[in-house]
Length: 523
Image (tube, rainbow, N blue to C red; front, side, top):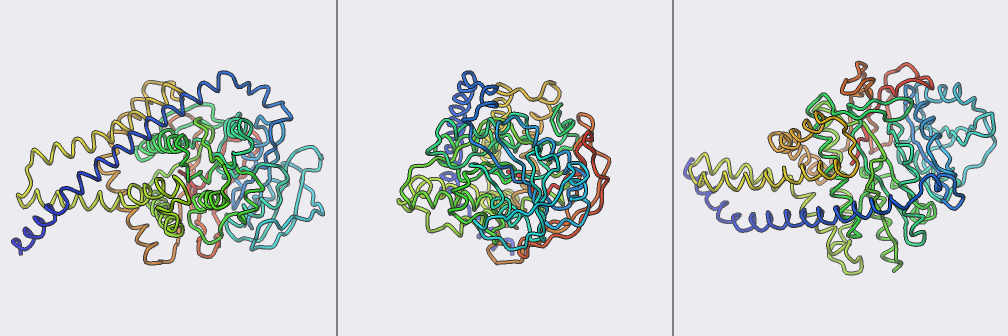
């Protein structure tokens, strides 16, 4: 038996030796290109920031209006502070549209009490398809507050967003998670590309940052610290790498195909043209941007999907392996489903660099990477155990591979520190540096396994069930975890049905943001 295994491993090593080296060179070269492109993009952003007067922009009637759509399901503990925060954003013309997706807690009651909502006889447009009936439309009694609350039967986040699109009245539509926290200048920053290039810009996204460890007061991040849990600390580095380097680099190369569902801005007419969000997609944010690319490529029109290299949106990330596992499985399954749906665009010259470069890259270096990494690791360990591997060569190769990954992480931290300097204490920066090194030892392999499981579930068509997710509150003091914990149930994307979350005390206007769902922690 050992001899058979030895023969198999020998043949596998011989067959994979060349391809592994080529793959290693290609993926790391592409990361280097993205790093350079991201650096150029960040430098350009910083130059623009020196001459852009955001105070003037915040008062200018020339800035396009924005409808902020907030899909909410059982968010009673934080919906009031969320809405107050969004209403206070600096922007000359923005409205907040909360779509209560059939909440079974006091989400709607909390809004009624705080904003003195009254029902109005308003007909909602049917510009994009929706599945559930609207139960009522409500506005503040004062007639001045730019808030609309739409109550509807429960049918999931996607349908809630589409309902919000129909209810929106402004030129631009921003989709915001109810448990996200925006910086005061978030709308001004993320809509800047629409002002600079109003004809071509069709969608923009901003940086999503991990809020764990931060102090949130009255819906604002007033203190930034590293989280207490190492699981969250590593995700801080992941988010920096994904947004400051990955998406910023792709944006510079005109190849951005993903805008986070936690915070993205789109032209309303474009959303109407494509029929809103896809009800059947698990990765609805990714699928939405892909549909936009396909629409404009097939029309032959010049357009731009942009990324704002500035931290504007904060969201809580998972702090337990169970929650993180479900999230990563869901993300990778969504990646598979969208890439498979748009496989006809791959290597098709009609779709330009999206079809010829970006989509092949995502197939090879995003979708396939976890399986190839785990397969390579198993092969190396088996060869080492059977005495078939030159130990020195193996150690050097692994050191180069993981060392390069650490350099990428440290570069993302350096970019953040040099440009935005959001971590005022050296201790927090040092913690993030250590986390960037620890990611390669256990965490990376663990998430790779989960991602493979998610993709396999998608390939074999298994029913997607999100299951019970733990909710943890944002922090009252820097670096301290909230004591409150309870369970909520994630919506089943195959049915759009949500189950009731456990009740929390409703937050008053001056309260800290309470327990938040980690179900949509983005990237």
